[in-house]
Length: 282
Ligand SMILES: Nc1ncnc2c1ncn2[C@@H]1O[C@H](COP(=O)(O)OP(=O)(O)OP(=O)(O)O)[C@@H](O)[C@H]1O
Ligand SMILES: [Mg+2]
Image 1 (cartoon, rainbow, N blue to C red):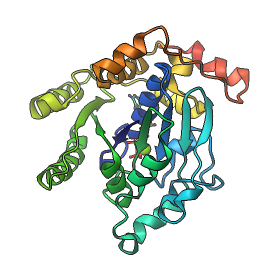
Image 2: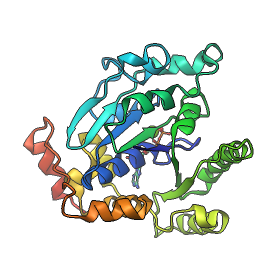
Image 3: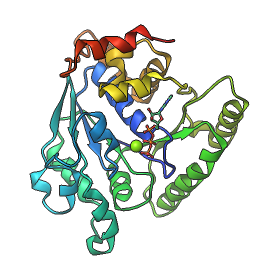
């Protein structure tokens, strides 16, 4: 089992989209993937069509009754989820009373997630108990950064945290991912160039382009490749995922034994599922 955390202290940079899209790509390569939502906003949970006011056995239970947690089948082949409930916000508020709980998630995953090949953790845009747990648990950190100058400050803060962890002996391998790249704008191109100069080997050499299909997929609550497999943003996430896989796993996933991603349709009207295709790559 490999654990990948997606984090950046800046909001709206594509964390949840990256979590869903990389998980989707891994499932497409035949891997069993567990999604973990650690964000009190519960965007990932909502994306997967669970109601954060109703869902039970969520990541909130990590901090009181971890034995209660049960991953839920998303209805898409290879994708399970531990959802987040709104109550998760209380954990951040009373974090002084849960001191020493920075390893709760890591312990739970070691005991209960061995059935999965990959765990993808989505985090809130703040350095609190959730992010600490997600950083402590992961083998690899993905840091999406919007190709916009305003997003660079958030990235700097994230890198400072990683630098402090490295000094204390807890270095986390990480990859910076340029998201929402719009090749038509100077701002996007210049920010990307800056990122490349600044983070050299730490930045994934590709970019995730702006692609309206991500919003459409989240509106419909389906993994992006399910409806828009050929769309340029989704193809970029598939390339990123393959680049992140160690060589031996990549070779294994390319063997004919690996199962294709046979996503089962969720309970949606055929009308809703057909509509976006008409605008494909508009
Ligand atoms: N490559 C992209 N092209 C176009 N839209 C995108 C792209 N990536 C993400 N989006 C859209 O941008 C919005 C913010 O993305 P997302 O929710 O993934 O960010 P986030 O970092 O998780 O935000 P938060 O910090 O609030 O959790 C969403 O509406 C999403 O659909
Ligand atoms: Mg999010």
